[in-house]
Structure formats: C-alpha cells, structure tokens
Image 1 (cartoon, rainbow, N blue to C red):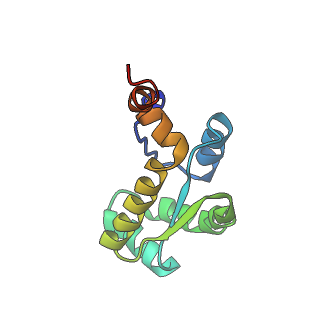
Image 2 (cartoon, one colour; image 1 turned 135 degrees about the vertical axis):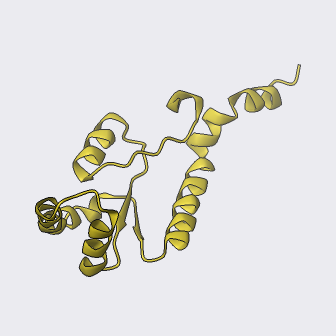
Length: 117
C-alpha cells in the first residue's frame, strides 16, 4: 500500500515508532499527548477496559514515554478530540502534498505531461 501512495496510520508506542522509522526512514511520526496526567488517568479509568493495576503501570510509564517526544515529527495535545483530529488531518494532508508523495501518487500524470505523445 505504501508503494501505491496510500496513507497508513499506525497506533503504536514510541518503541514501535522507532522500529517503523528504521524500516521506513521517510515516514512521518506523530506523538499524541494527553492535556495532563489527571486527564490521562481519568480517561483510562473511564474506558473501563483496564483494572487498577494496569492503570497504575500505564501511569508510571508515562514519564519514560514522554521522554521520547522529541523523536517525533509532530506533537498533538489531545485536549479536545475534534481539534486533535483536525491537527492530525492537517499533518496527513501536508504529508500527502510533499514532493516525494506526489511523485509516487501522480507518476502517470507526470509522465504524460512530460511525454504528451
């Protein structure tokens, strides 16, 4: 799908992002942060998926996770879901119109314009 110029979004942690970057150095990475530790804890509890032990471990891991924020191309603060989605869409759109992406996506058109026979 990448070779066809399609967008691929992965929801992964910083370690997974590092692996993807090694395989695809041209990839664009986005680190999504909660607006606060309190908001993160409230969201984790509100999901009802994890028990208190899992939530406690996830909260303890936040400091290490955030230490890797500078390794990402973009940072989005997920304070308001609609705004965070707008920002993510802006990143995707900006990435789509980069020269390398456009050359892949529109190779046939570029060839036709260069050789209009």
